[in-house]
Every structure is written in C-alpha cells, then in structure tokens.
Image (cartoon, rainbow, N blue to C red):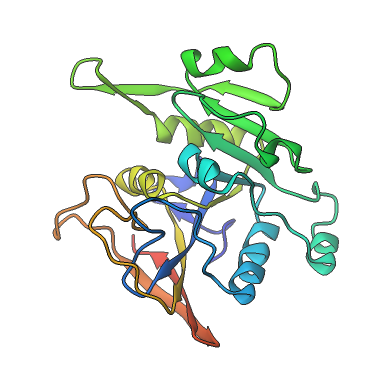
Amino acid sequence: MTSLELHTGTGFLSRPYVTTVLAMSADGKLSDSYRTAARFPSMADKQHLEQCLATADATLFGAATLRAYGTTALIKDAALLEKRGQQSLQPIHIVCSLSGQLDSAMPFFYQPVARWLLTTSTGAMPWQEKQPFERVWIAPTQSTFGKTDVRFDWPAIFTELKTLGIHRLLVMGGGQLVAALMAHDLIDELWLTICPLVIGGSQAPTPCDGLGFSLKDAPRFSLMAHHSIGDEVFLNYHRQR
C-alpha cells in the first residue's frame, strides 16, 4: 500500500503519510546516556537514509536531535536528486522545539535546505529579527496537568501540514518525538537499522521514549521487508490498523 492509497474508514488521510527511519544498536539504543551524536551506522545506512529522504516532501526532527548533530541529513546522490524532478532538491527540514532555543551558529543554518521551525509563541520570539527559517510556525499546543505541561497538538499540526502540500513526511527522531507521534497513532511506516554494537544504559535513548505503552495498548506493526548489508539488518514495518 503506497502513501497515496492509505486511507481510513472515513476516506483518505487528512494528514501526511508518515515514515520513521532510525538506526539503533543491537540492544535498541539510539545513542549513549550522554546523547552523543550517533555516528555508528555504516555508509550503507547513510545511503538508505538518503533513499528515504528522496521520497519525502518534508522531514521532521526534534531539537535535541539537531543539537546533538549540529547538522541535518542531505540527499547527495545525483541519481536520487534527479528523480525528485520538479520537487525541490531537498525536502523541507522542520525542527520542532517548544522553547525555540537553538544555536544559530550551528552548521545546520548554513546547509542548502528550506528550514521551518515548529514552536510556541515564546519559542518564536528569538527568531523574529532573524531569517534562518523560511517559516516560523506557532503551532497548536495542548496543556495537561492544568497548564504546567504544554505539548504540541500533533493531530492538528499534521492536518495543517497536509494543507501546506506535505503529503509524505519523514521523521528522523528522536525517541521523545517518536513516542508522541506513536501515542496519537500518527506513524504509518517504520524503518529500523540494527547496528552491530551494544550500548546499554538505562538512561540511553531508545527509538520510542516517553511514558511507554501497556502491552495491551502497544502499537502493532507488520514486517513487510528485511535485508542485511554487512553486519547491519534493515527492517521495514507497516502499522497494523
């Protein structure tokens, strides 16, 4: 089933088709407990990520992921760039940050991509006099526990993304963002690369952090494809609905 064919009982999706692509250690960690930039995947995994990026209208990632790396992933393969045709060479890169606290000196702000910031009215304030983002989007939020815990209203955000012409969205982490989207059943497809190392640590980030799910309510996926390159295993899952 392709992104254009996916539908619900009430008709075609009113949001983008969402694919998450992550590389993790053999024990399910995205990085170490210091949340160091995880540069352990091979060149084959980097090429795989490029292939996923080449199918996307936009990519979404959390501020912590950006802070760890300082850069974002780019499509560099000439054949992939050519296949994008009339699309922009790179997908739109959307950073989500409630606080908006990002270092404008990061290399990310000098990379050849269209940048959007998904934030709050408070988070938007530091960027009012700066132009590194093509769009600073004060997104809908929800409050829990009174008004002490503000979170993005992801269903409303994704509906708006569809109206902005984003039909295929690639999520590149981190675990907190993936957990929030899983909780709203907003992930349709999952690519996992299992890399040959063990990191360990109870505080090390995983592909889906947050509060977690009970076994009864855990989102279920079907394995659609798998292959290995060298010592890495690539798994492709689709959401069971």
